[in-house]
Length: 442
Image 1: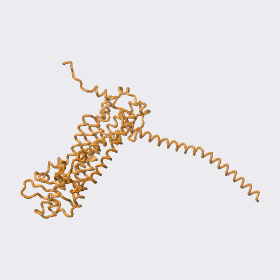
Image 2: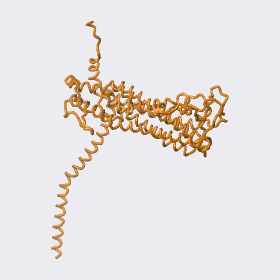
Image 3: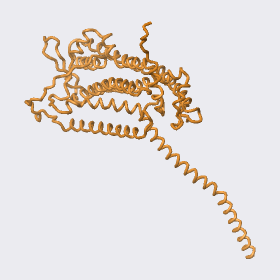
Image 4: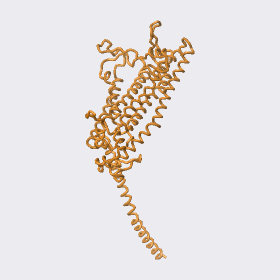
């Protein structure tokens, strides 16, 4: 019995060893495949990292030079750090500056006594100025009880109409205008890439379904055999003339940043600097009666008024302007006609200025005079001469430059992975297309 058990045990052990050898034999390719797969995955990750860096290099240089790309990247990081430093410095100075009146030398030669400021003439500022005055009148119960309520309802209705129209214009531009422009410029550049790089074998396919060539296969001599229609379209891609593109986008961005600056400044002055009071009856101080064009100064706002102005006026104003800035850059970058390039930039400003157009078109002269005679307290009563007092607005200029740089080289998806390979072949082509004077005298 023991011999039988021993033989069975030995047989089972042999079978187990054979099975183990077979498993190892079959597992070797599996393990080797796994190791190979891990190596390939690691190589892919490294390749993606190098590709991303290469993309930055290619996108930040008009000629695809890695050295130039690195200098661009260093410049961008320097600008970003400088902006952050200046913003932090500005915040620090605002907090640690002399907030109290007794700490200010009022007799200093360079000390300015700031007067109450006025409001811009547009629908947004009209809503704040007249809304505060009507709210004040209704709370204090002076004069007619019906007129402030009716005028307040009219102002709110006009504000909502203005915001609704601007939002609808943004929606229509995003849905009906920019997609066609983006599709057209992508088709033109795709045809150019396929031709200039010798066909699909020397290109890769992006997530958009369009082709991008491998740099080593670029053949500038093939431009002569490119279809004339494709030449005319691709050579008017804004990215083919980088200086022109930067200039137009910078002007458009500064136009939007000007609006953002006004929004932030008014929000800071009215919502943060003005004291929070308990009743709107104390929100306005009037000049003596009988004085022509008597001024009405807003000296405080209740928390309800501040929250109302924040969410009904400042938040839509700020985010709609930011969205319009991005949308305008996208539309301009997708315009493959230099004539339309400038015209579109001018057309975009119409959406920004619509609040002023509506104000001057539908408000009465008495309403305009009421807005003009409404004032608000300044952020500080005294202001001395300092670098920040004179040059703090340069932050907005630096913000505009930084945004244009980031959009062109990092954020734009009009032509993803743009190869910067159109400028060199198209410059002579565009020069030949310029009208030359007829000196023959005929």
